[in-house]
Image (cartoon, rainbow, N blue to C red; front, top):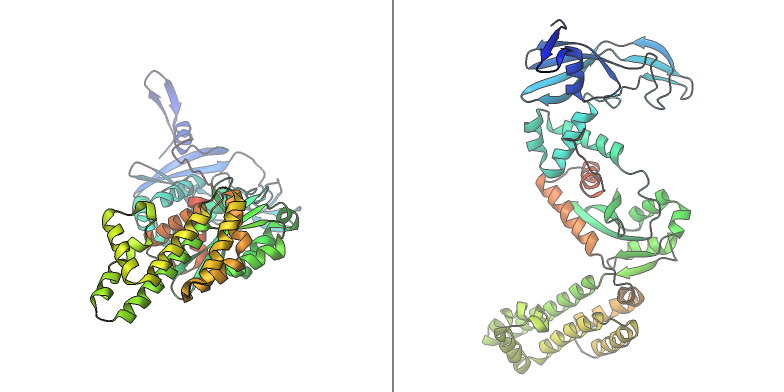
Length: 419
């Protein structure tokens, strides 16, 4: 198709190259021509600069040779697909001391898509599954994953690991047979700043190595569950940071101990009316006392009359919850010590084991009372990550999932509809 002038209403003659350049919305390019092909339009373009630029450092450098013309997929115009066509040059950069393909203002190196197209693809991947993205954009499933990785590398804030003060750490299981990802969250900026394959001390040590010794010294608080591996890594690399164990993990352990006592009572009672009553009392026992209904209160009264050890386990669970609800640290310390003494005399194996765990992490549990900081933000991001994994019906490898986690929870904001 030859270029020609045509008239727009009230505007006068306008060159077709100008119209195409405005439609492409790509800066630093010249439009040289266009050609209709089956299914779309191929637009011939070139960079505005004459001398090629290194794709690594983007400095002007001497040309080496010219490669055959290539096509880059651009955003479609309605149902009409658009490709950009250009014969890229190779250049020899004296600063990088290597020969590479020149920098292009519309696409990343080794990509067959323009940056505008990739940003639209990544934006759709944030809000829907890969299969829907492939249908909307007309590309294959693997290309979506590769594009997401490139966009994350390009858009992720390079200063995300600077000025970290309060972080949260947790693991996320993405596949059966113990395949985990460790996630580190910045409590102040409320976003994921690092993710790595594996869990425990080895995985978190990689984070501290990337953070650097000086930045490790600036850490003030680390929230986590009662993982020995994470705790050991923090003590080794950031010993000055206060370790905070989430109170909800502690209360979860108390609920599990109470449920163990209940199941033990059911086994001992055998096939009796008492066993059937206790079997139906799980939720009244696990509820907070102030949330109990009249029906729950009647069941608890019946348990108190029929089997006092189970009711004692219920009182231990409630006593621990009340101790962790204290606002003053000295009151919490006093109540928690009294609870440990009570649990040790309770003759209930699960609660004696729980008391041993709490003694081991005593100061970290009390740190929650002073700082009022929990791992709830990290757990919420874990729930979002689980939704991402389920939306894709699972991931075989960790890298693709980590890219999606950083895309959706790493503070990356994409606005493909805006110029």
